[in-house]
Length: 201
Image (cartoon, rainbow, N blue to C red; front, side):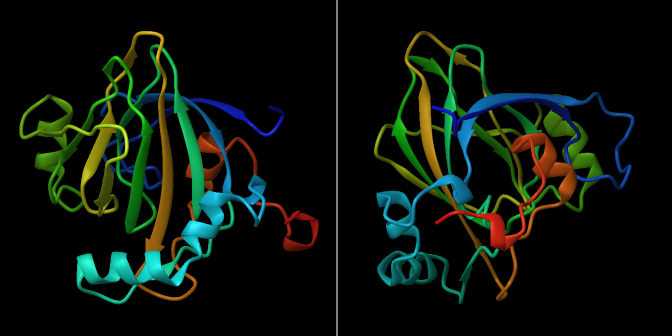
């Protein structure tokens, strides 16, 4: 239980410190999470993430060469959304994620996105206002592969006593890619990246 971090934060839609769209209200996100560097190498989720079969499957579906994220905290992690928890609008630092919905809530916890928004301020503003938003309904056991860096997305607040539980696996186009902005790391994981020598396996 000591591994679980309660993440509650206000953040901008770009998840960086560029100051872009700074006039928009901050988004609110909250959840419980276990970071990748807190998962044992023997855990099922880490074994799945590092399997050649999964990497090959994701590459085949997306039709391009991909690499596992080089970020030890964000490469694979577990999220738990309780009553009222959700993710505000944001763009990911990582290019692609593989999201397994392990448990669906009774109500709420819906994944919504705005396509091709990253370089389009007008589309971002419209999406925050509820225009051009596309829902993607998931059931327990479903997998979502998504280009979270290019498309703004969110998870609506969970309603009811059954939490939404997901496993997120991140991938990059280049070796060594997928490293989080420190702005994002401190808000979503609550701590800086530990030196490799101090991380346990």
